[in-house]
Length: 111
Image (tube, one colour):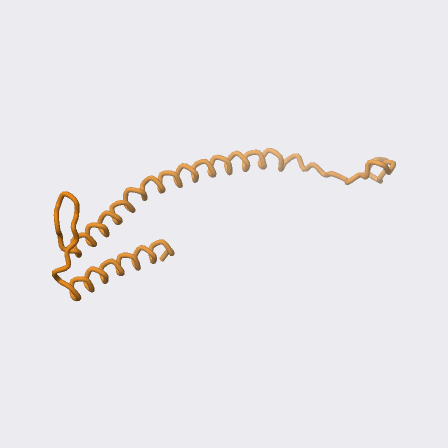
């Protein structure tokens, strides 16, 4: 499993554990939420957890789309480089290194 999945799993487990602990320690714990008035704390924690989960799922398709686009660009570049390499392979250009300030020596193939 990827590290991101483990981190997500641990965050979910901690959120559930926190909600259970709050419920066991003080079942009557309430938080004042503007517009709703006092609501149980575990409702707020649960809502925050669900919103975070939904936000992750909204982010995921955009990230996957960007990765797919990048992968297509890499494949196009790879295909272009492979076609260029296929054109150059039959040429079999052999270079003999030459130092510019030294005279050219004749080889047996030049004679």
